[in-house]
Each structure stands twice: as structure tokens, then as C-alpha cells.
Length: 581
Image 1 (cartoon, helix red, strand yellow):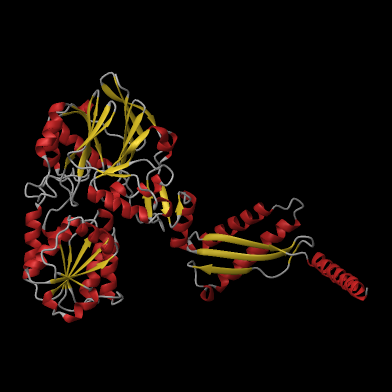
Image 2 (tube, one colour):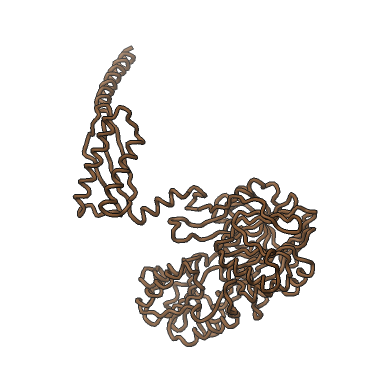
């Protein structure tokens, strides 16, 4: 009997950052390697990636990383893993192309080239494990589910998927292949749970195209469309709707050159007419009713660009009366406030705004009915809900129970859980460190809770700096302490507060200088404690307090200065003698 383990390294009880692993005897197969964009409280953090410690400890066992699709939640962390562990990467043609783009942004990963293009027909033999794939429907072409055929049965990972009977060939689900996998016997299913709470059928993409086309038809002015650069199917629909309504498209935004043009090159994105796309600098040559401006970007970036357009600060486009802004992406709950703010700014600029999610139930992820169809086709013995917060994982469990899967065979897991298949069931055998790794600029994992706490305090209550110069030898303060504040109080209108703070610092420093057991750490902490107590008493706020202590020794510096002069004179005399000789 083979030893089988399921490693839940990330992607549960959170949205994004998908990364799981299957261990069969001494082999590890990694499923996806994604990132997550930070929530608001992670101030200054660019992205969040999984903790790789467990995989690094077992690096020699890794057979490869197998990717389901080309979105950041599946491929975004790849560059940070392969820069230290260059293992083979397997994915569909578009997925690999997008993974290469992701690696270009990290210097150490640029030269990595162990990529392998696979498709739904591919089978990869690893002795007692065979890895194969099946087509799924998602908002990006070439999405695949992954099957690991083991001696104990198939282990299936769906990746992101939904059911859409009207999907075109690049997006169609292969139902017969899924049923075939189910007939072979599925030991465990790792299932997408992102949209499991949704009891309403998701709109099919044909209806979405009709909606966009009608919007274009009945608006007589200029149209600005906002979309995620990785939502290829939505971009395709905008192309087709513009063509149907005799409009030209100007592309702007982050990743347009890379993602959109890569999809075009690989024929995963199709232009109905060669003259459809125009340069953004040429929009002045066309009437407003002939234009669509497609603004793309990563998470949050399209909204930021729309705000700049509304304020007249965008370098290429300024919103005006008669414009229509069409937001085509369903916002996450954390973005709803930002969407409302953006809508208000657009209306203030004189334009109108329409959000597609207000009119249609859209998602790239399976609804309850979609999940239950997948369960019935695959007939898994065990279901492990992944890809979602706890309430979404629980909703997937309810879906599984409704189709007859026993309660004890639906396992809700935590990040870091290692499950082992023994005695005909999966048991939790250990939990490993699955904390977030934070990326800030070029720093990887060097930002911790203390730094984030300080950033939060700085953002909320500002900083208060006390600068003191002392002569420790003479036990005195050389000059009056200088007090500076940023983001806490306005110094010129808070003179009494500043003066009293100066007195507190003077008293604390002098007391420490008079103490025979003088200690620098104690002095700084004493200043922080005394100031913190006083400032909170006066303002009910806790700024970051930064004491800066400078030390001089005037008598020692004076003697040293004279000594240098004597040495210089002596050296000059010696030089003079050598010249005379």
C-alpha cells in the first residue's frame, strides 16, 4: 500500500494564494503556486505568498509544479519559489506563457526555463503515479483540472471552474473525460469553493456578450470599459461587442502589452477585424460614438485609473459629460467601498457608470449546482473543500452532503494541515507553518507583525520625535530638547503640549544622567513611557514615539584637536628636513 499525504499549504480560509501538494511515497507533486493581493490592513505590502518552509525541507522529493490556469492566484508565487528551487513546471500553453511573464518581474527567476507545455491529452508517468489533465471552464482559456492516478485511486484537483453550456471551444469543459475519471475511481477531490454560497445559477457567457453589446448599441457617447487584464473572456467579449457596433478600441493600462498581446499571439484572444484596435493617442481622430477605451490592470488598478480619469489626472483620458463607464468585473467584498467611491467620482465628472454585476449574476467559479454536478460526475470517496474562506468551505461541505457523500468523508481543513490516508480514511497527522510571507518591494518575508503594527500606528496617529544632546561625562544636557511631530498634532497650534513634552524629556534624561548605573536602552524606554502616558492623557492617541539621543564629550574633542595639530607640525618639519637633504 502506498503512503499518501495531502498537504494543505495555503488557499483555505482565505481568498487566493492557492497551493497544495500530494505526497505519494517519496514523491511530492505541487498543485498551483499562487499569490494573494493584500487586504487594507497590510499597509505598504505589495503581495502575499505562501510559506515555503515545508517544501524547502523536502525539496529533493518534489517532482514538479502543476498549474491549473494563468491567474495570479495560481501562478503568482512561482518566481519566488523557483529562484531557490528550480523544479519543472507543467501547464497549458497560455498558462506557461503567463507564468513566464510573472517570472520576468523577479530578477533571480528571469533565467529559469524548465517549463513544459501540456494539454488535456497529456499523461506524465512518474513510476507509480500518472499525472493527467481535463479541460474546465473559467474566465481564462486553457484552464485545466489535474488528476493524480495513484495505486489507491485518483486524486483530483479542480482548480478554478464553473459550468457553462454555451462556452466556446477554448473554454469548454470536457464532461466525458470527467465522467471517465469518476468511473476509474476517485479517492479524494480537492474542490473549488469560492462561489459555493451562491444558490443562483451563474449567467452564461453568451448572455454576458449580449448585455455588453446592447450597452454599446444604446449609448451614443464614448464608452470606457474597466476589466482585469487576466479576465481574457471579458476582453474577448468587449472586442466582439465593439465590432458589432462599429466602434474602435483603444487599450490602456498595466499588462496590456504583455498579457493581452500574449493571448493574441497564441490565438487565445481573437480580433474580429484587423482595424479594430487603435492607439490611445489617436482617439481624438474619432467621434465619441465610435470609441471604446478598454482600461485593464491587476487587482484594484482599473479602479485607480478610473479615479484618475474622473479627477482629470490620467495621462491619456479625462472623463467628460456623455461618457459611460462600464465596470465589467465583480468586485470582492473588500473592494465594495472603493467601487462606491469610484462611482461617485465618475458621476461628479459628469459621466455615467454601469456595473455589470448589478445586472447579472457573474462569477468564474462554480455555484452550488455546478459543484454538485462535479461531485456526481466524479463520485469521490472523500471531498476536501479548498479555495475559499471558512464559510465557503462549509457551503461546499453542505453541497457534498446533499448529493449523498457521508459527513465523515467531507474534511474541512486549516492552512498547514497534513492529511495521511491510512486505514481507509484521511487523518490529520501534523500541522506545519503556513503563515503568510509578505512581499514589500524587493524584500521577501522581512516585514513582520512589529513592522506592520508600526505602519498602522504611523498611519493612524503619526510620529513624535524627541532629539536630545547630552554630555554624559559632565552629567548634563547640552541643549534644550527638540520636539518634532508628523501626522500627530500641528506643532504651531500645540505649543503648550510641545513645551510640556520638552520638560518631561528634560526631566527624564537628567534623572538618568544622575543615575550611576546609566543605560542607553533604559533611557530611551523611559522617554517613550513617560511621553506615551502624557500624550495619551492629553490627546487619547498613541503616536510612534522616537527618542533620538546624541552624545558629545567637549573636553575630549578639544584635547584631541590639539594633538592632531602637534602631529601635523611635527610631520611638516620632517618633510622639510628630507627636502633639504
